[in-house]
Image 1 (cartoon, one colour):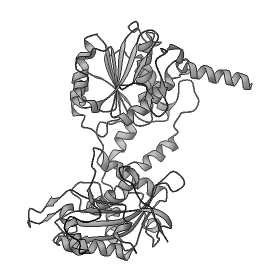
Image 2 (image 1 turned 180 degrees about the vertical axis):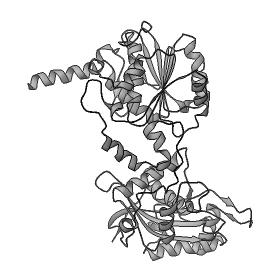
Image 3 (image 1 turned 30 degrees about the vertical axis):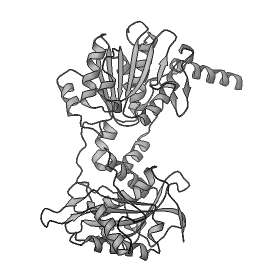
Image 4 (image 1 turned 90 degrees about the vertical axis):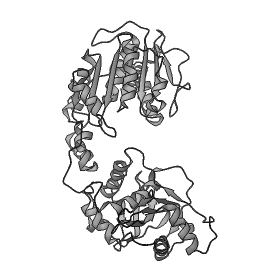
Length: 459
């Protein structure tokens, strides 16, 4: 029995496609003969897998669900970034029949396929190249390819560059995505015009059940658990693959419960300290949050403690703001030397009152407050990092910490507590300032690796 299981395991690793059983959405996608197909679905439904399997069949020159061009062919996979490409390269390696690979094809776990531009060569002469959207449309110029798989949303100019390169050989374009993090009006217009075939697969237990299997890969309870961790405004996209999120007249942080999360409880042990500052010139808009972070609480999840908060009407001077922030540190028994990362918003100008707030002005004020020569402040207030999608990503992290019991707010942070209970996600919300300050300070400590923190011991 053990020897038979070992033989089956070896065969599965050598030729994974021989043991691949699609779900109904995957079978529908693999069987469709449209030259431009879009698999639009929620998360965790297997959309990337269906695209990779189709691409591999075409590279092999033999497809079990439709007629394809004979090998060899040139196939490309376009990913969002190098980081996302590593995940896709790992999935590609798992699916590839190993005895079909040329001898010079090498895969290194965590690093991808060998080559400046990762490349997979098959014995039949077919080539699969992995490229990123970040390389730009110029990286595609001059190329002619038979098959292109675009994984996750890409800019319109990339799509417009791909189409003539593929159609020059009467080839196929596949797009697999969950419609979040990008403006996809252009793609939706192509679908409505009948140019792109739209295959829409919501995340349901039935859509994750392999054909012939009794049980789905995702139960309704697991889907409900995922839904609880998502923001109300993005559930329609991330669960059902809808083009746009449905605006929810609901607070973002539904998991926040004052009875559970508001405690006079300081962390004990080595933690990272962050100060996040949201600059503002109107009532309640100038906010600084002091937080402590444990990147891994022992269960793989971070812990966030909000230790204190200072908030003003925005009409304060930089010197008053500096004094309030340094006073906040003192109340917590900390000094500026204990802060691992200072993060402030971009500068703001008050059109009504003519006031200006910025990180540079606050640093100068701190030098005066600490009796230091100009330009000698021993730390720097970094400008908040705001890549596309970072806001909702931060909200999801905070919500996950709340659900996992890893989020505590000191009772004196009354403004933040009120904001967490009332913030509905709108950009113009009066409850957004303190949450932005928390995002800048605490979430960047969890997610960024661009600095060398020095953990301190509290308690």
